Image (cartoon, rainbow, N blue to C red; front, side, top):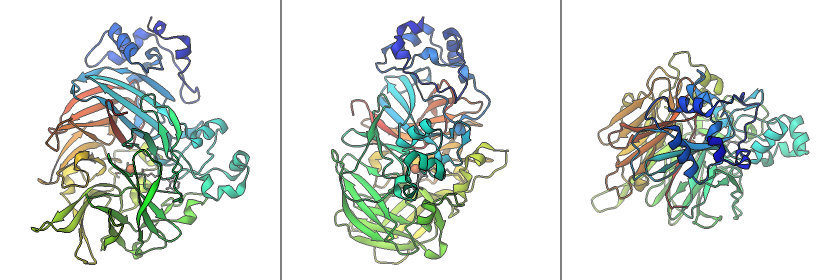
Length: 559
Ligand SMILES: CC(=O)/C=C/C=C(C)/C=C/C1=C(C)CCCC1(C)C
Ligand SMILES: CC(/C=C/C=O)=C\C=C\C=O
Ligand SMILES: [Fe+2]
């Protein structure tokens, strides 16, 4: 029946590597029972019609199996079960009719090559997931990014490039690349773009990680890998911030300089691949720049963080991971925050601050006096209480072995106040009592209309303890210093991504989209109301998905 809707050629586009899971075929009616058993029911006929009307379906829904019933294991830390899948989901609740467009999320979804298991969350090969919202209906798909690192691993059945903590064995690298020297050069770094995904103002959608070569353009409709996103400038370097700032007018990035410790701030215009230097900041301390996974901007300034968790050139090319991977903790070197004027490239402030550890800045803005002069910069981040152990907690072995004991280190919304009056020191304090969000804090988003401006709300993952990983969604009110938390016992939700309602004039008028790796191996897409933070819709996936990191929103007709 339903299979007849698809030509054999179309069915053949499904890729099911038998080594990843055991293929168990089920009949369409059994399938329909398993997917449709809970929640709002649709009959088989309407499901078939809806899949058939989605123009880009490549895998027949018949191939969905009964995994949706769960295999008992939390899907979050389990490799993706198939290379790709696409189809319509049954929605429980109501998706707002204004929510039209595509949410794409990237993340490290494949942590093994056959029997060889990776060590760290950040090592996995990139899995992109697509939620396409169309007038209340929801289409879902996922696919592996065809990076050189992924393709080489699949072909040679071993790690061929340096990942976050995985390193190719010299003998396998030799047989793959043929030149031992390049194992100890930038050429051995991965292009596994597994961290985030951005939509440039010109419509191109690019997946990113911290290696510059790991910038890969994808088609947001088919999730196909289009090819490398290559920079045409000669800025060089090997690594950059995984989170550029992207607006309708520009793309701002930070490039750490490991040779002459410092950072280059660069800007790229829409429609080009050429980054132009805005300015440079020299490091104040340490043998190398601090790790810069993300950075914030205000309307007129770029904020450049310099953490005492610093890159380590030797560790980048070492064979075995060290406790802090490619980084080193240098408390004696001091912690700093620099502020660069976007227009002139001049560093207008450089202050020492208490030690901090952060992956993600939330937002920043300018504070002004009565005459309208900027007196200070406020910059907020997900701050891990200056404790580097969070990196180790993200080892897969730790994530997979939750025994009920509370092991997630405390985190908070760290608020920097950076005076612009020449004072040498800045402040860092919790913006609200961390108990409001269970002392877990990471994976944040805001209403993008408030980027660089005074804002009130942040959406993030918090904690309901005991836990070993952030397991709640939390809406933070920075004015009332309160949080509202959402939790599904045993589940792990990904970053709540805020999408504003078109035409909204109130900051929290919109929705927060997340994907939950639920207990029992299940998973679902979740839509929360941005204002009440109550659930308004969910849609079960055919099977639970691995944890994902960051996403972006592509409004309908934007590409
Ligand atoms: C917080 C987070 O998501 C970090 C991800 C970091 C990644 C994927 C870092 C990758 C790196 C490599 C793949 C090789 C070179 C060093 C380094 C930048 C750590
Ligand atoms: C998932 C994570 C930290 C969680 C700790 O609380 C960090 C992810 C960083 C990736 O971009
Ligand atoms: Fe990140």
